[in-house]
Image 1 (cartoon, rainbow, N blue to C red):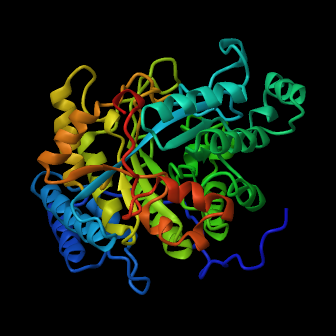
Image 2: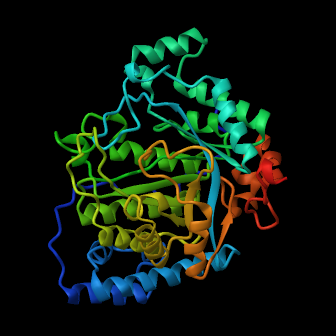
Length: 444
């Protein structure tokens, strides 16, 4: 498939990634100086004065009173973002269902329990009818989004995946993704969001015809975690930071509203964490396509190589959320998963941690499903919407559903949507570009 000639070229070339030494612990004075610079706008999204790696790295070490001040700056920046987006006081979530199209993957991430081996699955992939069954259940519960989550190109590692595809006259996993997403659109009216991993520009352009948005986590720019034995991504060809950075930039060239983000606590140090956030901020400025950045905390899981590693320290995670808010251009939402906050079976600790994330400047909770679990973190159930609404309301915000693309992209459909998707998106959008209220079938 030819790429349209009018695709915008990046306005500037990305700076090459360099391996960063582990930074020394800053003094409180260092942190106060960085906070003062941030308060003066040094981290704002002025292309002529981009955030410095030194400032961002230093602010990630903020604790105690300095962390409180950092959260205050981030919250003010979030409020400025919401006002600019025409939704002051509104924190969003996406009512969705999760479709684990395949749990096979060619990568070997050391913290992942989603990917597995063929012998532990009833089939290599979900059939299209199974996908539609999940989507219809979501439609019955008032959902608007179908999130396709899957491993990277499993046919390149597993014979079971290749055989399943060949038996259905398919060559690649991405063909199955495309056909399944098209079926969801045509038969349920719900909007697919695709997370199929690393893609090239032609693949992004092709899938743009069946999905209003796509996503892929950057995770980290720390190449050593991919290239050295013992690193969280060692043995995972699709986790090379430069490769993932290229995909994120290509999504901008393909005019795909895109989701990316970082993982906190997988072995990266503060400078690498800061570099990862700055790389995403640069890509957002170049392509204007990065609709949201997820900041996700590592939680150790049984049956993984990293099961003995400590969870991400929560203050470090909250500082990363705040720095993400400060370095991202206005218009980019910052999201943190609500089900990874707090301790299991302790609703109060979850509520306290969620309140802290709101103080740190998030404006979106991501996908929350009334039908399916979080297949990537199945041990961490979704909070009930009533509980999430209460936490959000206590912080002074209204919890409101959104679509898989944010209002700024809904309002500019000719630029950001394939012509086949304009009507399906508008049918689900309200006047603000958020999700039209859809009652569960039982309440109609």
